[in-house]
Image (spheres, rainbow, N blue to C red):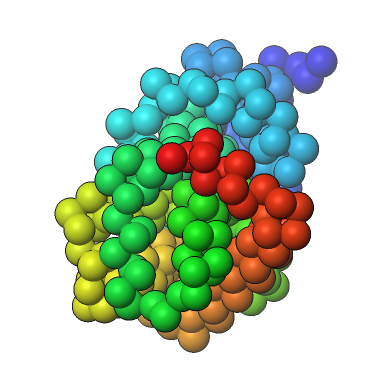
Length: 266
């Protein structure tokens, strides 16, 4: 046990790699004299790892009351800085990123299935009959694939911003928070029926990209928006999502699950 008055070397440098003396709690800013904060009980500093991220997600995936409104407001007004605070250790005020993303993806999926705005795209895309049937099934399911899609996307983003020192786990948490908020915007657009036109779809894509750019600028503490790197991340996201969509769609058709799924979702 550390002696009273000693400082636990558990914080990270601005680059996220080198430990520094951590004199205040990263969560509540109270003085820390030991391995845990005496005011809020959080460890002096807990680096974000995939093991900790997924372990906590199992425990807190349905714990949406814990800081949900605070998270929603923070990601609406200063997304980059808020996510940066979370990965740096200020976590108690925020909903877990997996929980946040899961809840808003579910709201989006329910909107798609209940209001069925996805069928509006039939007039914009030249689907064959089988493609249209498969698309209507996987459109809502695909939303939950973000948890897989963002694994390679986070690795790509971490590589593009490798000098920042943020780990792939940090970047994955960033992606989940951003995705949750983007799905909230998508829900509003879908419910309003704006997906019925090419202009509505283009507008939604523009909103999603601008939000990603805004969040990246604050998260990495940049003076100028990283347009090219944000564009690379957005393209990687789109390519990987389409590859997974094709794989899932072909699997549905090849396994003979198309008609049973149509009956289930009817």
